[in-house]
Length: 121
Image 1 (cartoon, rainbow, N blue to C red):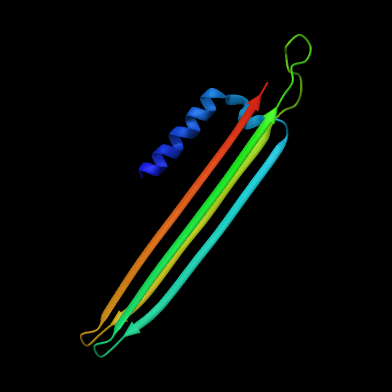
Image 2 (cartoon, rainbow, N blue to C red):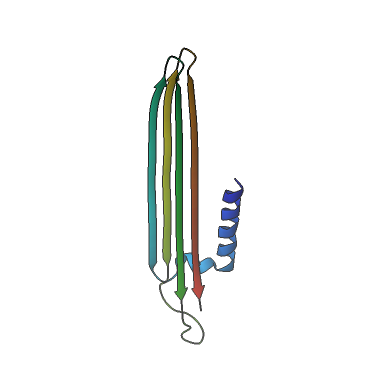
């Protein structure tokens, strides 16, 4: 939760510093990620079924645009940039245990996304 708050804070700070950065110079960036894990197991007669799933997704987009002043210091042009990131992560774990058996399941999902855009005049 702390990482999500930090990421949102950095994004908000970046937009306050350079609000036009999200619409600079016609650049377009897109990233998609789909991770699905399915685990099925059964433990009977004193045996153990252990399942572990780790899903990690890291996406990073950086866009740096240099604009030059024209016509008395004003930049004239149709400038925009688009950055999209999508992540779908799913884990399904099914297990059964009977007669003193053990079914242990662990799932860890991490999704880290960073977007940065900057305009240099």
